[in-house]
Image 1 (tube, rainbow, N blue to C red):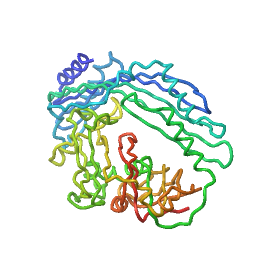
Image 2: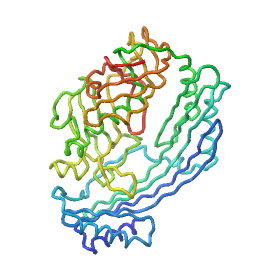
Image 3: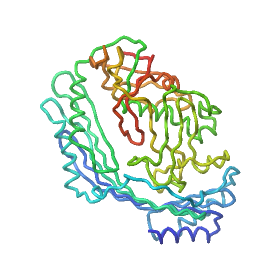
Image 4: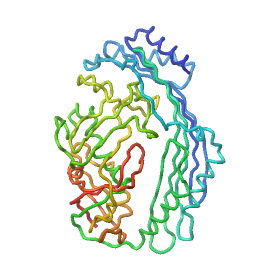
Length: 435
């Protein structure tokens, strides 16, 4: 792998690139799919390939291949593409070699050694957790993956990492009485998930959501489960802190560094170093050392998130937020581990009256510039006298993410990793709910 990447890099420079970068990725995954209380099938997938960026006079060319004997062709395409493209005056260069931090909890040998039978068994554990005469597991999946990547560039960057992950998801529906659905999932870099409990949680939530009541439109305290809050903040807030969006005028936070934009006790950190984090690594996806970046600190907006290109365009240091979908794509700004911090307490018992929302549908339709959103709440309940009370049949919640962040008044103790977002339940005052 290393020799092949090094050869590719040398070939790009020999063909006339001023700078060049090679991104090699290899991944192996196993999944077992659930349908109607059965494991419907299992499959293994493999992926391996190389992406090449070549830069000539500030113009960037890119090509990729998964065929080893086509590497020379891919290099030629990348270099030729750079030659015919216009020079980008904002290009300042690929990152240089640096000292990389140590990270922990990103590799578990047990996940690599899993056999297919064990993967199927873990999927069955979710079904068993949900199974009853009143619950049907309609869909779901277990997955495990192992990945390895190597980044080399002409400025001396040499980053090699490997990692593992495992996850489980199940969606259930009631089969007796009033129809209600629910889901639960978990993801980890280590083999430490209780898959049976995922099924138990989903079944309990579906049964508790039966015979829902209707409520009148009003404004009230809303407690958002980590699933719901993470969906909203990733869709409505994260685009505004993307430096590329800011530089292109697509952010409501342009020029607002140092302003108080959220509740005074709220802190949000983008952390590429978090032990066991889904997005943890020694570097980002172009070889910039990982770091912790305070996005909001005690309510004050502190920083946008940058990759090397957007940082160079603005004359600042990259925050280590370059992300790639795979070897077939170039890097762009992305979140690492997005950690929400607020003083935690038994937030439900401290709420006299309000609504609790487990999940939302439609967060992806949020206005990425203004932060306005309107979503359907799923598995929502009324809160009365500090207790979760009655299920709500149908509910929409709407608002603006910046008003929402300013109106946070509490957080639970139920911190969850929802992909790369790490958050407890969050209570927001004065939210509009429509039954």
